[in-house]
Image 1: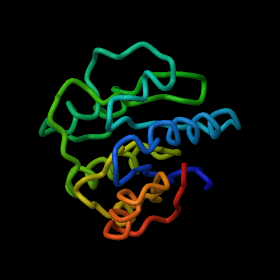
Image 2: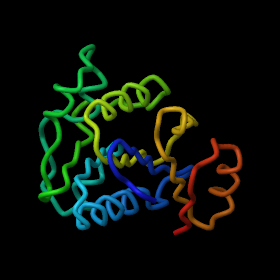
Image 3: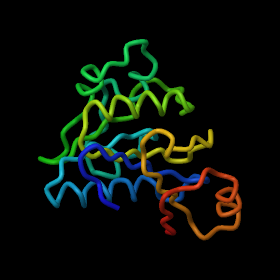
Image 4: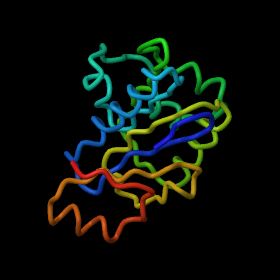
Amino acid sequence: MHCTGGVMIGCWSTKGGSGTTVIAAALALSRANSGTSVRLVDACGDLPAALGIAEPSGPGLTDWLATSRHDSDDFATRFIPVTANLSVLPRGNFDELTLRAESVARLSRAMQQLGGCTIVDFGRLISHVDLREHAMRSILVVRPCYLALRRATKAPKPDSIIVV
C-alpha cells in the first residue's frame, strides 16, 4: 500500500495480540527507508519497545486528545524523531483512551493539516470506528483464529487484510 503525501493508514485488529504494532512499525520503517517522511502514531503504547527506542515520558496522543486545544501546531510538537525520515507520536500519559469516532476524526484532521505519510497503530479497535470515513486507509491485521475471524465479519470492512 502506497503511503505518500496526505495518506493515512490505520492498522487495527479485532482481537489483542494480532500483531498490529509490528505491522505498523514495519510499514513505517519500510516507507522511511525508501526516503518517504513518515509519522507513526501510537494509540496503544507499544511502539517505542517495538522500535527499540526509550520509553517517552512527555505528552503524547492521549494527552492531546484529553485537552480542549486541538490545533496542529501543538500536535506537531509531540512527535519524537526516530530516524531521519521517521518520527513517532507516543501514546502519552493520560491513561484512559477510548478511540471513538470523534477522537479519530480529530486525529485525522490534525494529520491532514500536517500532511505527509501517517501510519497509526490502533491496536484492538473496540469501538468499530470505520477508519475509511476519516480519510484513512484501513488495514485489518488478523491471525487465523476462529474468534478473531468471527469478530472481523462484524467489523467495518477494511481496505486491506494482513493475515499473520
